[in-house]
Image (cartoon, rainbow, N blue to C red; front, side, top):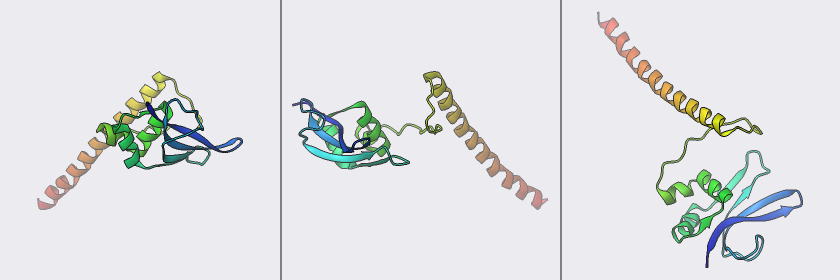
Length: 139
């Protein structure tokens, strides 16, 4: 039996909420499932993601395959990093509703990395400044 971690649609018409479930890959989207792992409410601002990381990591370790959307949600909740052992990816903040091309996303990532490097340089300069001030006071 191929187990998938996927979204199960709930809520009223035009007001979706989702359950993150472990289900047999052959069962329908809103059909039978094995276990509820969490919930996802995309209509809230910001979106609300409640995932039981222990259950998610257990299912991933047992070989369950997440869908693309569920994999993104697991990365946000931290369960994916707990499963793979990788460090979390840097978070890039983009204005709501804007769509970037892959080249623009790459440039934004480079800018975020450069900003992080600049912050480190400023901190070291600030640490050196008090030492210079203390040396000036001793003279």
